[in-house]
Structures are given as C-alpha cells and as structure tokens.
Figure 1: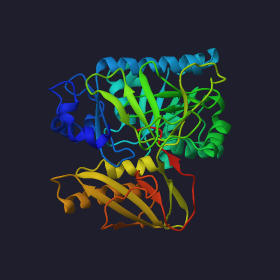
Figure 2: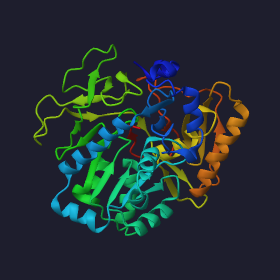
Figure 3: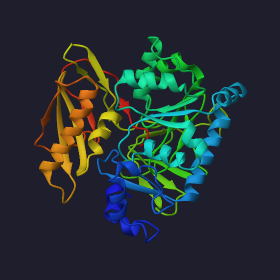
Figure 4: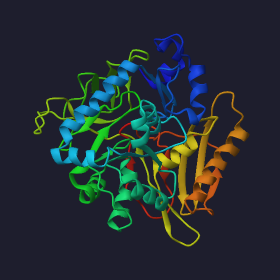
Length: 406
C-alpha cells in the first residue's frame, strides 16, 4: 500500500470510527496542540515523506507502550555503568534539537511524552533548529543535556561549534535520527563525542524502527515490525543489495493498521549475522536526499540552513499541500508550492513567504530573495521521489543529508 492510496481512504483505514480525517486535519492545523493526545488518548503526527504526499499518522496507547520499550532495549545495548552514572548525575536531562511549529514526529513525540509526568516536563526540553545557530548553542550550553537527539545535519553544525570552543556539552547519548548519516558526518560526530553518538532509524509510521550497533548496522525491532526490502515491482530484493524501496508492517498499532506499506526508503539488508551478536535483522538506509543550503549574508559571510528546519517552516504553513525549495544562488531561493484542495493560492503564498521571510531574517539573511515558481513541486527524474530542499545554484557545495525517517 502507498501513502496516497491510504490517505485517500483515511476514514476507512483507521480502526476507530471516532477518528476522522477532517477532525485530525483540524487538530494538526493548530501547532500549539502538538503532542496533545487526540481524543484524549491517541498520539498524532504528520509528515510529507519521499512521495511528497502529506500523511497523518495515529498511534494508540498500546503501540506507544511498545515504542517506549524499544528505548529501554537501546539503552541496555548502548550504555555502560559509567554512562548510567552520568545520566543520573545530570538528572536525565534530554535536549531534543528538532524542527518546531507543527506536528512533525520529533516535536510531537517529545511533547506527548512531556505530558505524561511533571518529571518529564522538567527534564525533557525542545530546542528549535529554526533559530540562529549562536542562540541554539547558548541554550544548549546552559541546559547541559545528558541526552541529545537531533538530525545528523544539525548535529554536524553543533560539532563544529564544539570544536571551535563555543559549545561544551558532553552527553552520555547523542542520538541522531530523521536523516541517514553520511560517513564524513559520522566521522565528525564521533571525533567530537566519541561512542556517545548513536544513529536511529525513525519513521512516523513506526518510531523507533531500528537502532545502530557498534558495527554501524541498524538492527530492526523485528519482533514488532516487519521490514521487506523490495524492487520497483515489489519483488524481494536479495540481501546484500540496495533495494528500490522497502515495505513496513507495524504489528503494534491497531488504530491505523500499517501492512506492507511503502516507506520509500532504499534499504540494504545484511546477508550474514552481524558481528555485534544481535540476531535482529540488520540494515543500512539510503533514504531521501535533501541538501544543506549555504546562503550569503549582506556582510559576505555564509549561513548554513538545515534542510529539515527550513523545510518545516514551509511545510507547516496552513494551506500547503507540498513544497519544494531550491537554492538558485548565494542570495536567492525559488519556492514551488502546491496548495491543498479548497485553499486560496494567493493568501497561501503570502502566508508561506511571510513565514519563510521571518525565518531567513532570524538567520541573518534579510537580503535573500524568494522567487515564486510557476511550476509545481517536481519528483526526481531518476527515482520518482521528492526532494523538499535542493541546492541547485552556483556557490559552495555541502554534504547532502538523507532521510532515515520522519
């Protein structure tokens, strides 16, 4: 099954007749309600994903309990006695450095967990990646987190701040998710924070889907998730070969059954037992490619924008069905948007550009031009998948980042 097929029949897809697409859409239209239990019991998040088609995901309390148990599994796999002591001394302070302003997986998950107890409200904190890097660095320095969760692209910028002496955090766990991690980024993070750096394959459909071992493989929580690497015709991909896509079956969530669902990620399954000793299915994820955007300030300095951060600014705007932001030069961007059915294109454009303009101004980029594209967002000619953020124009090139989950 594909995301567009299921979203077209959302009210038939869900297992609780009290959950309707219209009600969920009204719920996620209010960013201040991120993490609030929908109908008093369900966790809800939204995503666009590799197809460019927005989706809404609803998880029941039993599924959430299963997902939480995987965090315990990961902690037992990752943490030493000294790590546990470090976490305890610093009160298990957890910094989630993620995109904010919507019901996207990172923010919604942490807010949902914060509502469970006063202790979590005190120790779990969200730091927006949309804010300027120096402000983010200062806030993290003051918080002194024992655990950090972020995207690899954002983590790389923080590692540079740490190397420059502007940041001095020493987390027991630095968890990266939301993007696949390129080898140069992994090397940078490991050089900065050592064995604390761990990668997670997280998706809005099943979170977390897999955890990284010491050998650099992601072990799927395959007692509750079935992950099938397949070709374009959905025939099985042999182990040891990168798949065209991958099908997910979630055995935990009953309010919104996910059975042989096309995630859109390219996955390579390990053909032999992993040397780490973990018998669970071991994979590596290629995912969707989005680019870091390097733009020029009026003073001639460079500012690097994280793709999931700038993408969420546009995607979180009311009326936007899907979007694509293209860097056409050091001080210019081209924005393609497709409005939701029934939305007025002109007010939607004005609101999107106002949000994007405000974001760019806060990054020190007041002279960056935003050009309105006449064409809609376009998929890759080679893969047929969407990239939301593309660095196409002349200027400094940076390592792209790949999606490993929403």
